[in-house]
Length: 68
Image 1 (cartoon, rainbow, N blue to C red):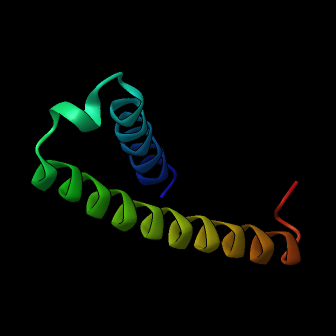
Image 2: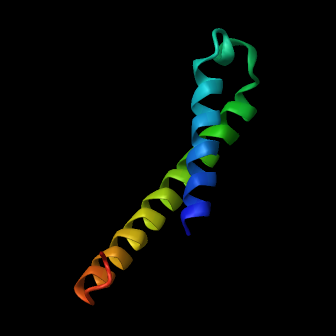
Image 3: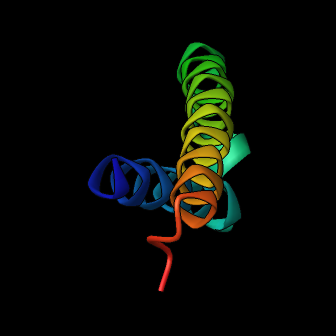
């Protein structure tokens, strides 16, 4: 799970870096920008779900006394 979270976070960083590239929105076809926005939204939802699941597992582990 942690590996997938890292992959998702890395891809989100890549997308953000592309957005911050000077002239990106002027040079990039609208369809590509839309595809990146959709991918970003999907990844953000996945990141949120994975993080919530991880936090839930950590809470369960701590409740069982195994969080040390």
